[in-house]
Image 1 (spheres, one colour):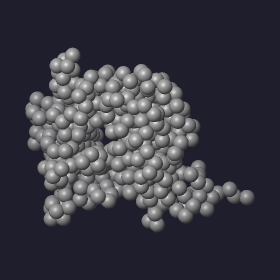
Image 2 (cartoon, rainbow, N blue to C red; image 1 turned 120 degrees about the vertical axis):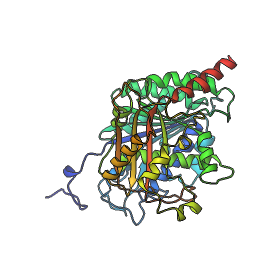
Image 3 (cartoon, helix red, strand yellow; image 1 turned 60 degrees about the vertical axis):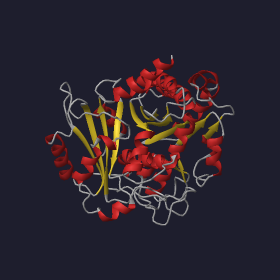
Image 4 (tube, one colour; image 1 turned 90 degrees about the horizontal axis):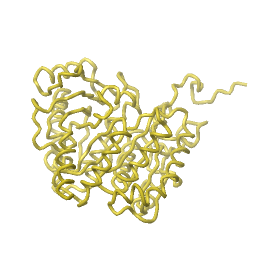
Length: 426
């Protein structure tokens, strides 16, 4: 009797799924993690309850790197239910209760929504020692369950902020635990750093400094994001007069989904998770990245200037310091040198165009490289264009680009925002 299932090739021919496990910690990490999953669901044609939509493609095996299929025998749309491979942790229940009551309540597995009852009160020590210590075992148990359900985990993505108490304190504990339990797996952190002028938390310089100390040792790649930079992009380019956190989260989600697109879809040039580290990190501690996304156009602008969005235009925009997702007020192209650059295109981009653009960027002095490092661009190509979700500020576009770069300017995030303010208070 042939045991081959009805949906096509036998399992042996299917490329092995390499799972990525996401961990969202603290209010910021969870809320922006939710925006990311909303984006993923839209891109893979999955409803908010986890069921595939009518246009779902059962041959789409790549999505299993981020979603767990509840019914592994039948991959057809009718009998399927997908659950994100994500652990959500917070030290108080409000934010997680919003998920439990929200539109995506049936998407997440309730077992992997973990909350304690007493929050860290924006205090690193409470998140890292007092209350975090009580919850780290439960958290790593959930992570272990997820890894046990996977064939071959390729790494972890951690969403958190470093200005608060839970994201910084418990986030550090979780990363430390991952380093011990899964030493070889890469850990990519998306860290929301304190902004230069906007400050929701008075002591964020303390929390940020203490958390950065842990990030130096325990993440392979950290993407530094800040709210103020994204507020400015929203106001300037998208004409949103009073941006809310959900606007900010949706922009971050667009960027993150474009970074992980190479793990979730096939493309001409695919980037796997370890390649981020290989291509962007010259020395282990220099792993704090600057990123940007283009095109950022609102509906009104988008419809008219659609045709003019050439590969060169969007790449030029991505390298404009004003469009970075971390704010550098005094970015100087000549002085602020790059150690490495990765540009990931999505949608209608040919590799020839991509290579020409990289040469054009170099030739026109849009970037300066350090002299002690071989200077190449890592280019990723991906056929799936980004998908627009409901209420999105960014207009639809046939192609987009995400730039992730290792630039020395990031040192000012630490020296001016964290150390200088730490010294002021201390």
